[in-house]
Length: 590
Image (cartoon, rainbow, N blue to C red; front, side, top):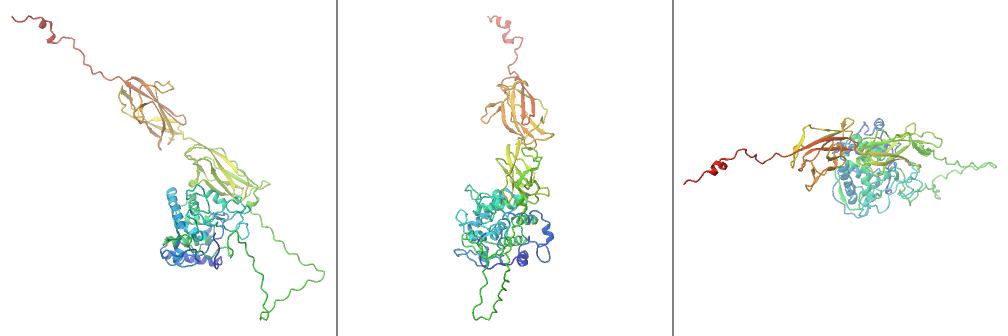
């Protein structure tokens, strides 16, 4: 998150009330989809209980790090580009409505990519812009390079449990430079453990960098579009925002900025955006690794001659009475995650499924202490690893699940893709480095166990001709249509033959040459397969067409080639009058 500037707002009732008032005002003027829940224009406790996913126990995308609480002005933004060079701290409507050019492009490109890849999500780019504003002030007013990388890293506070979440190092300091604890990173403030699965390459440079606004915006879009959420639906939008940072104040603040940007915004030069002035953690310290937290100063002594009453000196200790030792600072109470010693397989069966099918068994992992006791309410992340298109529900390659009272995390149903072969699902504890548990999964090819012809017309043809009917077959598996099953068609001399015939009926390839074996065939979604036209050469007799599929289904069809009808006229038995002997032997007239 960007550095802190200016005064700060008090948390609690003030922040909530101000945020809610802004949402209510925007709702009253051209923001019909902003809703409130009670007479105080605040989120009611009952409603908060009604959305268990996400939960307060979930650290979300940011580890629930601090965020900027500044709200947009209630007036409509004026789309007049700023000509100011460099960041400003102004609070005018124009400066707040403007979004730095590269940052704005990153949001819009990410939303366009999600429209193509997950159209059911209905992600508005204004939501990304709102989160970017709240998390980093649009990358510190657009201080980014031409490729979208921040000029300097944007780091949140150390998540050591002192005033913030307690998240031990998960990336060995690779992203945040801290090998002891994690910190939120970049313009969209991802914690390393979330970036590990949510990270995306948004600018096409071959790597996923949380400090790059294109990469971070695309990652945020995919993060918000998981779980099959439709962000045009109020309940799903609320869940998505709360999953980013579980705070009702955060929800109201993001919604306020999203509606503000929906009513109009404009592009401003990079580096000229306004910087927020207030942050949710109530500290006046910049969240920069080079600036330590400043302790409160000691009270200043009274000025000589002043009217202030001098403070009463402390009563000296009685002779022989030792001074009271200082009370040691108690160690922080271990979190459930701190007590986990290992993960283990919780009885997952063999994982195998045909392409396109859902795996019958679900993956489960158990979190235990060193003494073997189950640990509840810790998060386990399941990640699909390997060259596969298998996915969890919603098309995701990852899923985070909280363990139950028995310490078990049950992964969502896993669906096989079209790629066959083996892959791995890896279970990792979120927030602490323990040995991962790997599960091997296998996807087998689609198969059929039966083939039938869809027609019963006899297949006959005269030599040198073309069969009138094309062969169509239907594949089934356990009685149901078997779609997308690979098949092969071979023309044989007889039912006992094992190799393709070199004469008789034939298909034609793309260049019109005879072929007697067709591979790469596939049934359609209804299990149907119609073969190409069949032709006959000048060989007569009975032949066989054999169709086989993956899974062993076989069908044999008889083909008959007959000789063509003769076109030579039959000779007459009696001679013609001109060839009569009497006529040929009569003497000429004298």
